[in-house]
Image (cartoon, rainbow, N blue to C red; front, side, top):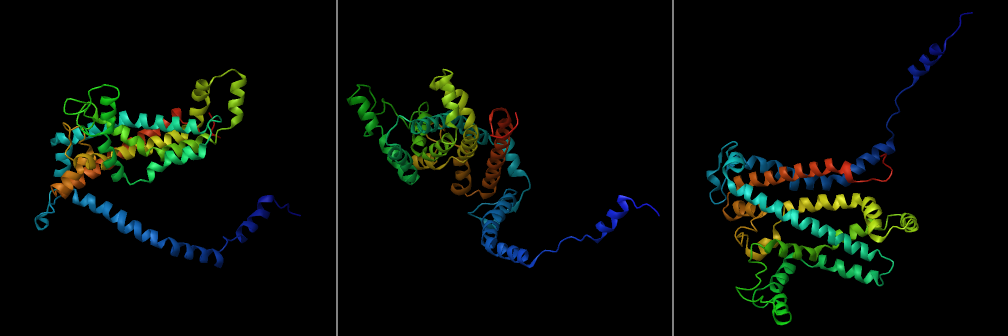
Length: 328
């Protein structure tokens, strides 16, 4: 008898195997899934994808809303103007980056401080304070900015009144502390106003803190580590993904910083151009001077810079962000 090898027995079996046909139930699920997500697909196409593509087309036009019939295709002339010929672009990006360097670390540190405080065992009434710290984010930002504009008013603001009448510091009037009119103080003032809406970042950080195993703190206490050592060696490394998340969202949000300076001074850049953020400059070009072609170019530049910044942050994450379960 001729010996039959294993390969000869396996080949007929493989030949008879067929790919399983898609069942009727699976097809129905796919159909209904497409039906349910179709409103989202239509919405994102109409309100995101089409405007996204159209804005790039507009960036290659000499298109003024005051005279839309005179729109002309000019190729990359707007891009050349923005990148090489317009110093205001670099100035506005510089103002934006400088403000981000000042305000973002302060905001993140303050959010971390509040989260650590609310996560402490020694604090009573955590639910009350958590609610109170989060409530300002529920107030419309325009209303909040107008309130802070009154608080920092040169003549009637209660901050200046308190400094002058209680502490004896000359703060009122033109010769006083002009919080929103002094180029050297306006960034700190805007940062302080931004702390009013720090509740979201605080809650996200608090959620990260509550996920840190308590056994790690107990072991550190046994080894004699104080609270600061525990913060540096345990808390911050363990919540580094949350810190990274807040950092990325905060950086992107600051690249679009617009509403606060616009409400305070109407987008004039006062004082001395210190509030001429890139979002303000884009708004003035597109909606004040009606230069939609150049405005679209500036919008694309903001998008590109934000994208590059995000890529850089993600690239740096490998050196300082710790994810549980990852190999060292």
